[in-house]
Image (tube, rainbow over all chains, first blue to last red; front, side, top):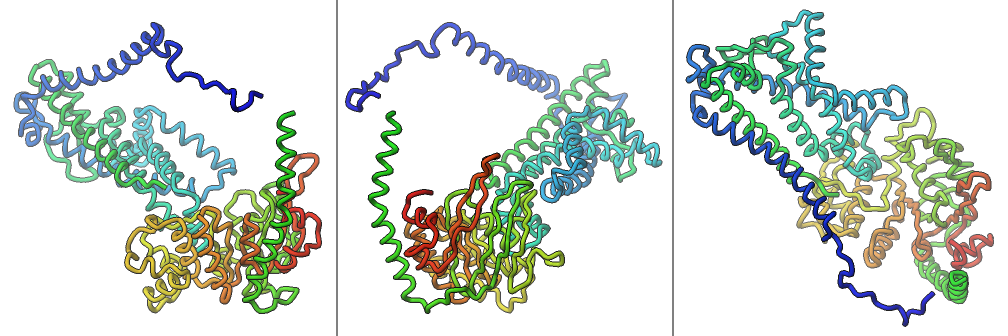
Length: 298
Length: 302
C-alpha cells in the first residue's frame, strides 16, 4: 500500500474526449430525434385540428345539436352533456369500488393466500385488457340481466369496469407510499385496523388516489370503442336526461362527423377534437397540480 | 497482512479503554440509584415472560426468555444487534401480530393474564401497554390532534379534551414549547420534540406499561437527555420497558437490565436471541455473573 505522503493527485482536467466523440454525438442525435418525433406528431395534430376547426369553435358547438342537413351549424351539445353524465356516473361507480378493493388488498388481504395472489395477477393483466373487451363483457352481462344496451347507465358500467383496475392499482400505490410507522403508531395507540385505515392511511393517500382517478377518468372520457360496441347512439338530438336515457359522447360524435364527406363536418369534427383535447389537458393538469401540492413528503 | 495489523491495533486500543469505560458506567449507575428507593432483588412483576420463543415462520428469533418486568420500574433490554430484544419488546403488546408469519410461543402475561389467550383482544392489549418507536412517528396532523388521537379512537370518555391534551403534553415536558402552536402540524417540530410528542400521545391513553424501542437512537445528545429525564419522571406512574443500544443510557435510567446475546446456528447461520442475565442494573454493570455480560459491558464484543 502506498504511503499517504506519496499519493499523487491526478489532474482534474479531462484527459479523454468524454462524450465529445463522433459515436456519442450520433447517439445523442438519435435521442433528440426520437423526442422531436413524438413532440412533432402531437404538434401536427394540434395545429391541423386547430386550423380545420378554429372557425367552428363558436357558441354553436356548445349549444346546438348535431344536424344532418345543416353541418355548418351542427353542435356537440348532446355529446358534451352525454360525456359529462357518463363520466360522472363512471366516477361514482368506479372510484368507491376501486378504492375499497385497494384498501382490502393493501391493508387486510393476506398476500400469501393463493386466492389473493390470483387476484393480484389478474388485476395487473386486467389493466392491459383492450377497451373493446370491456364493451363486449358489458353487452353480454346487460343482455343476460335485461339491462338496455344503449343507455347512459350501461355505457358508464362499461367504462367503470375499464378503469377499475387502473384505480385499484394507483390507489394501492398511494397507500403503499404511506409509511408503515404511521400505521404502527396508530395501532399502538389502540386504534383498530379499520380506524387506522379511515383516519390515517386513506387521508394520507387521498392526493395519490385523486391523481390516479382523474387520469383514469380522462382515459374513459376519450374512449369510444366499448361504447360503440354497446351501440352508443351516433345521432342524438336531445339532452340525456337520466340513467336510462339514450346518449352519445364526444369521441363517438367525432367519429360520426369525421366519416362524413362534407368539409363542414370535418371542421366541426376538428372543433370537437380541440374541445376534447382541452378537456383532457385540463384534467391532467388538475391531476398534476393535486399531486404536486398535496403529495406528502415523509 | 495490512488489515490484520490494523485490526489488532484497534483491539489493543479498545482493551486499554475498557477499565475506564466500565468504571464510568458503574458511576452512572450509582448516580441513578441514589435518588431511588432500594429495590427488591426480585421485581414485583406487572408483566412476565415465561419460556417465550418468538418465531418468524420457521426462524426462531428469540428463544426461551423468562423474566418479570417490575411495577413502576424501568427495565432496559440491552445486547448486540440481532439479539432479538426489539422482537421481544414488540411481542409484549402484540405489535408482532402485524408481521406476517410472526408467532409467539410460551406465556406473556400482564397482571397474570396471558395476552396471547384466544379471547384476548390485541387492541385492548395495546391500549394498556403503549409503545414509543425508534423513529419519531407523529401523524401528519396538528400537535393537538396527535395527542387527542388515542382517546378519540379508543372512545375514552373524556370530559375535557383540552385538559387531557395539556396534561399529557405537560407530563412529557413539551407543553411550554408548544402551547402556543397546538394547531400547527406536528411535522414542524424538531426530532426530539416529535419524540416527546409521541410519548405524550402514548400517555394520553393512560396505559400502564410503556414500551420504548430505542427511543433516542434518532436524537441528538441534548434531546436524548431530555427523554431520559422524562423517563425517570414517568416511572413514578408507569412501568417502562426500554430497548437500547446505548449502555450508558441503560446505566443512567434503568432499575433493572436484561442482557441478551445472539447465538448463531451452526447449520443455517441463523441468529437466535437469548437472555443471558437479568438483574438490578447496579449489579449488571458492576459485578455481572456471566462472563458474556462482562465482555459486552466492558466493550470486548458487540
